[in-house]
Length: 121
Image (cartoon, rainbow, N blue to C red):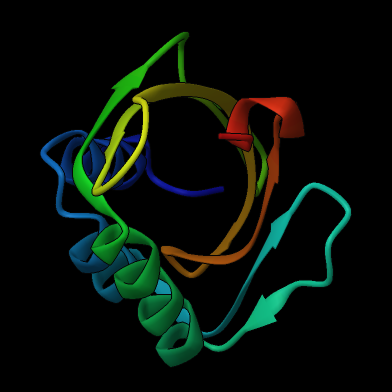
């Protein structure tokens, strides 16, 4: 079971806008991330590179919690709300659930669940 303070530190880093730093600090070297049913991305370095690419497409991204952090055994569920201002085009809001597995104080798997219609635009 992950330490609640460690999970809260991860959340605080994301809310502060340090998305890449949160991956560097809180994900295991072989961690995976998956968007809905898409194939997972694997390896912390791959996750960091992808996050940098995504962030480069936006002028601003603000993250906030949209519910409590739930911890049960090695599983953590976080409901996020992201307000995103792209370099071009209209702003959008993305509500998602992040389902994580933690081991030895690090995230080893994470799947994001959201309505894909939120990403259109």
